[in-house]
Length: 99
Image (cartoon, rainbow, N blue to C red):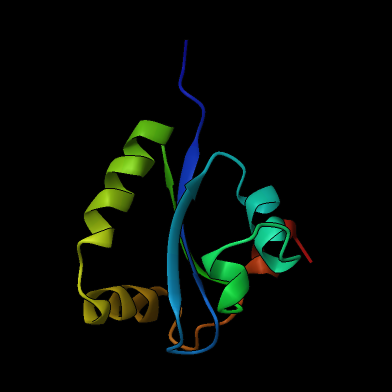
């Protein structure tokens, strides 16, 4: 049996704003939940709903391992990773839903 694909993702409140790191097996649904502010907590409180970075992984276990690694990083490393792939911190929502 093959493991389901999973994603590590980063959301931001604005360019160089507050950053949130998470994992999911359904990137579209999870991003939508953040955008609609359906969960109480950090992302709702700090208006963090712009998908600025994501990377696919072969399993949720691999995505969680990467999340744990990145949560230990300092902010400058996270910013550098985002800006390497997405220099303007554009919201990648339309990229994942095909708009």
